[in-house]
Length: 392
Image (cartoon, rainbow, N blue to C red; front, side, top):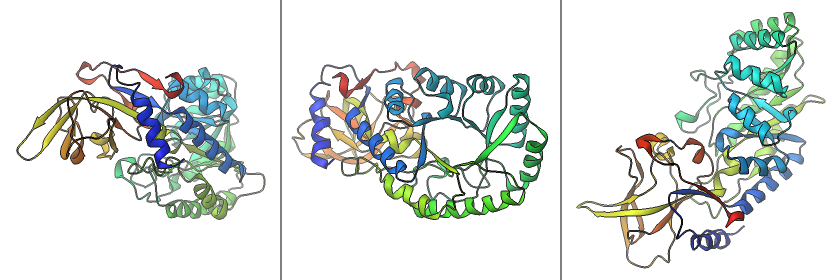
């Protein structure tokens, strides 16, 4: 999909945004379908299995499209497990990760007989075993191992270093294997690793493959079968050029693993992609409330803020800001800010944009992941509506 097509589509829809109450989230379902087609095609080329990470965007209409495309579900809470079930995902295609699963959440997953728990600690494994025994079931478990691989991404979204809270340490493996051998209510399905998010350097994944190969050799010494490997996700997207690169390079991503993972006979390879599936199809549409003229800069005050899109405040993240009008007038510099009573409620500083006026519509692009799903009611802000291109 070329640049002019994507941009013209958003501007085409913009004409229908004029009378809508802002802010709201807008999803281009055609782009989402294209992305889903490309990820499934690339995965099938290597007989890989993909689970969509609900934490990126759990809107039911998004999930139905994901499920119809044939992806499984990767969940990190009991409510996400239930949402996946409610949206028609087969329990045999649901995995449940998360460093702090409650007893109630584990029971929900056991009740639905999901495919696998990604277990993050020795104590969690003991709890899952006890709760499974109480239900007279056998829980399928993959061990999340912390591989100590630097994802070279923002330190807030790095998960695979020894200093991070995620996963089982290598020093605990002996105890973990002993528990499997003595407890009939848990079955080891394999290994799970995840090193972070928004990773754009594919060499990082090559380093992950090397670590996983060594882990497999270690587990072979304990004669513990590993029917499947869950290699996580983390593939990044291009926030700066959403029109030029609307779909991530899934083929190159999967090729790294196909080339460097030492896959055992009959072993399944699973991935849990989120951001790269939905980020580019979503935009946050907002309206200019006020333009304040300053001595050093101008302020464009939007009716969307950190309550609608927290990533810039939380991660210092960049989102391209596009003005949805003809762009007439002299280009000026603006600090683009929200209405929330926090100095961190700022989307961009000294950003060059066509002259803005009260009432102008703007789009914060690449907001389909970790956008709407993280909306809050801080300042008692009212939640906006959600629109899909198919419904306009």
